Length: 460
Image 1: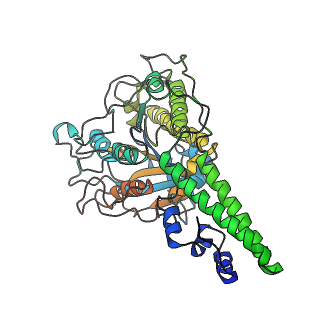
Image 2: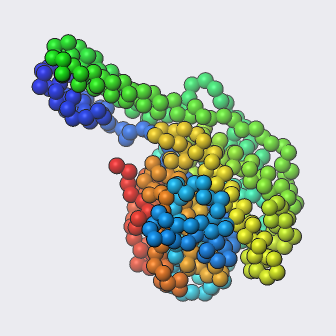
């Protein structure tokens, strides 16, 4: 590093531009600047969790009702557990799984379309998916770019094989099975994890940080040497610049030390596996959330699917539902079924709120892990068992460009063909994870192009 600050004028240019990295860039020779920024800036990992919950909700007011502005909304009975995360919540109202014809009452169609964005009709053989789901796509694209061999955690909460199961699909539209057994997840992801010693090494990020620190050290030394020749006023400005450089070095060191929150979870053998009933569902759900959070904190994965499945044969005999009827039957109402169904769906949202609590409790970069993580939520069907007039939601992701704390309503007519295509939402999630593109899934005019208006904007 042979470049020097050679004149008072050159130093003052350095001091007057600002206190960020750009403040000293004009004082450096071009080859030095290119060396310092040859790699994209390192920072906290970008993460996303795709949460699927079954059978929708009885009535739109169970989720939310809009107010006089996007930030003025009221959460309904089912979504109430998310109230404590209101500032990190986004509710998308009147969304639609766009397809050529309305056939209604098709759980399988919605399940296939939710994360793939590709139109499926009930008349298609087996209502099969037509392509890869976004979770699997990001697992391949982001995984190979960031950490080769990055695992994609696909988790569901029970062992039984019933109706309305998976919603993750490979390139051919084939089902990617989730793992209902938390012990299997533990063994495959954490069994050989050794915690302690230096943080997990990322050669690319470490090299970028070393270059940045080298530039900062060189500029600080030159400013410190030259300040002795300055008058009192200019010396104050030089001291301020030296403080800014020291602060930036601390941030670089903090980025190098990421992963400090990593701790190996315990393999809780108290949860019976396999479990022929659903009574252990709450304990299993809690354990799966612990594993997911630990995998994020240790940077073992950055993409996860968390699936709360409710098949035809799954009884809801767990607290707080405590109804021997199956989850699907409850969604069709009658007697006290709607009350039990609301309890079941509210329980799902309490799981999402618990996950947000865990992520928010971990400091990371300029905020918390929740600020760098998107929790995307969706169901395969909505009120009256149709695939329009849907609510889709997300929590977190503020540092990824998600414009949090709002209820976005797209039109007032809840009728087939009049809702907002959900494909632009998938595009927004993809873009927020750093993957460019203006379509995902369906590329026809039916789906639309670009990101969802008002939901995401690229961070400055």
